[in-house]
Image (cartoon, rainbow, N blue to C red):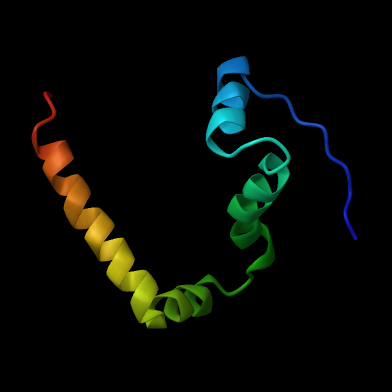
Length: 76
């Protein structure tokens, strides 16, 4: 069962969501982000389950390795 929720966002944040996520997909995007924080009473088990997903871990490692080069060149 779904429940309607009204939230307030900065205009630029909303426009970014609209451009990046797309119209009619913002609610699902936000729900997917929030769900693990409010419905997972055993975070340790959830983290173990995620770590067991080899494809996900490989993709995460590739992403992390790719971003290290981006950060290295940042000015401090």
